[in-house]
Image 1 (cartoon, rainbow, N blue to C red):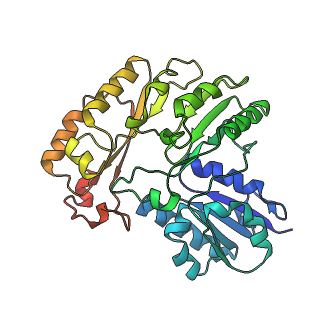
Image 2 (cartoon, rainbow, N blue to C red):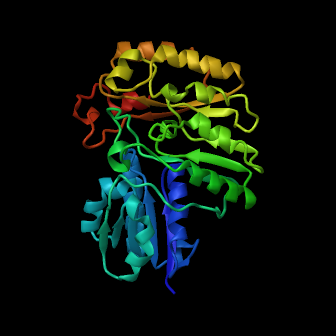
Length: 337
């Protein structure tokens, strides 16, 4: 029996998707040793140029060992055709996950992107080498921030069925996982298409016997509504939130086509901090339009935020995004400093 190895790049959503992919494998032996694998499935990230480079370098190493390479994840959409033409064995889109085993049995190269409208119908009930369990509650994003490629590779926002999410959580709790991590492309959009909300879902998850802690992936400031505020004091909610500001200049947020507002963001952070939450954020530097004046305003505003940890990264132009068409005002060296 041929051996298959799964390599995951990027976010928690990809961790979930990799476990789901594994559940479809019936005719191959899953191995944790990539050196002995006949087939390597790469769940890729494409959020930055650096992410693309990391995936490409890994692919080159696998090809040198002689294993078949299957590319899935966000990079399947953005780089799949190019990499398929350069000799990888297969490209698998998100809607085609359940076909992986059968496609491999055909023993001929395949390019199956599928569509960006589907939601997963199966669930994950076990996580090897993890003490906590991930649950994907939604897929896609409607925000269309000017710099971001993700909506074009993940599709529009769509929610998983709530009954299925709750079933998955109950099974995971029965299997000994008392800590859940909710993940998705843009989890704060959960329920917008199903007359529900993230807050309502959390309230129902918190009632499940055996669940002691619920952690959240990144959430947008504009998505913290009243239903979410209602569960902020629940003991099972992790006292840490990652809220994606991306910038603290009002002018820069408009250039980025963001939905948040620097001043209301500050009010929100102060509110959450007063409730005992540790607060992290993402921050992009060096985006086109970031003048010295805008940067000075951003720094002055940033100093007022009660942020406990920061993920700052240099702007990376992504093909087919609005920001990539703008003239860059900041050199890479200046942005990194």
